[in-house]
Amino acid sequence: MRTKIHSLIVILLYILSGCVQAAMGQGGSPQNVVWINLVNTTATGNNLQKTSGCDGCADAGATSQQAITSGDGYFEFTVSSLVGQRFAGLSNGNGGTGWQEIDFAFRLWGASGDLDVQENGTYRPLGATYAVGDVLRVAVEAGVVKYYKNGTLIYTSTVAPVYPLQVDTSFFETNGTVSGAMIKIN
Image (tube, rainbow, N blue to C red; front, side, top):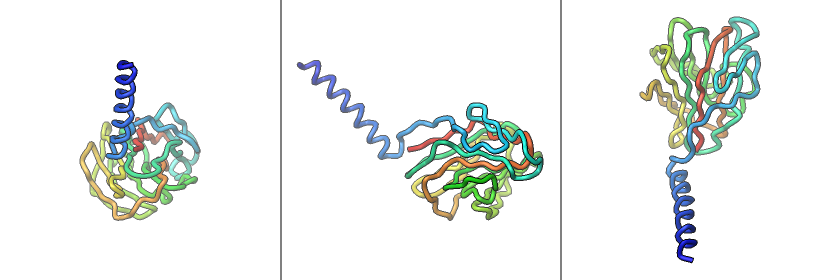
């Protein structure tokens, strides 16, 4: 009897610790983005690449199967190439391939390595650059969207997010990539 009670207490403590972590925004682990709605792109695991369509046109992209439905979360990816102009971020209800439809996106500008933010087509210049190996993150924290490069905050949005938020992309040039895409849902 004592062993059963002890086992039940351990199980309850385990369940309660998970509930407390979730309530504190610590629940959920980062997971690979599962790409859906692929248009002129190819997904290999959590990597996405423009493989067809017009070279130089915003006619390619995909969204994530997963969504941040409330609270905190983030999307991040690793820059694996300087090839092509592309946009990657979080969006509510975007079914197209256009960059101006993405609510909160990084804009990576090809070989020049220019890094900026675009929010629903509104340009937010950062004067920043990126390089292969950089990790870029678009996060929702306490109802505020923040942009990070290698763990350093580089821009805080003044636009409130509308849930649910999916990962969303738009590619101009063939062979443009979003690599190692991860999403954390709390």
